[in-house]
Image (cartoon, rainbow, N blue to C red; front, side, top):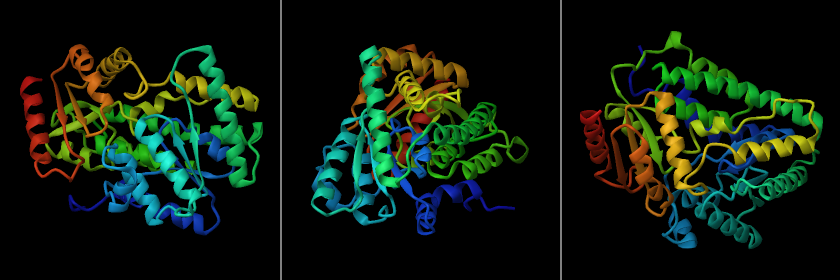
Length: 377
């Protein structure tokens, strides 16, 4: 019988994401790093590279803090820490979403460090404007076309209709596995922690391998139902750094049955084109439209849109409570809270905390929040 603290296969894969990616690069696989949800991973695959969404620990070095300053979301500083350490030098390049102030500062910081020779990895920004207008769609389409040129420059492989069709088929299989996992979680067959690991694996592992791992992980025959034993909550607020937050919440007697951050369920709202025979321009247009109409993010969407999406998430998952945890210098989720909590239809608690493992009283405050929600649910 496996000891409770011993990582299972899914956890081991998650913990080894960066090390495994580096090993693949050593045997000739080109990898391209991604920061944020606005970069279509399918385009990286179509260019002959492996997409690797940068998944970092909560560690922030003194050098990164000095360069970026302390008044910036910790995620950006944590990514910069990893880049400065040299642990991501195996990447052909890094693509940064223009999705928050922290991401923008990270991009310009890394671009300047690359210009000065402090880091060797080339960096590009992917700008997908989040305004539902015809002009926005045209602009975003043009940005994705420029992204294709950048990827071809990095990989020496042109993105064609044929390479896109192959990449879409591969990524669609992973999306199917993720969708099945999501449904299994809603039925109590998968914890929030396991779901978080599955989403990260889908973003960091070659599609065929990710499909197999995720499909095996959500097989109900090998799991124990969490239904009735833990409080099902919907998580909102800041996107987590690593999996420590999920571990704290679920060890406190809750199960995260859904979330609205960009390492979770919203990934499935960015749909892939279904017509594999479409031209490259048509595919780019569909990708731009999909992201424009995907699940709203705190930093780029209205409070009303966020509240509506949160309510829909609670209804679709069957969550009995709403929990928001917001980091310093990530203020956007704070603006959403009044509307989210008022329209959620369930008990709601918000915590304004330091980063996980950087506040001595954080586990206690999370346990107290879960108990408050449990008593009110």
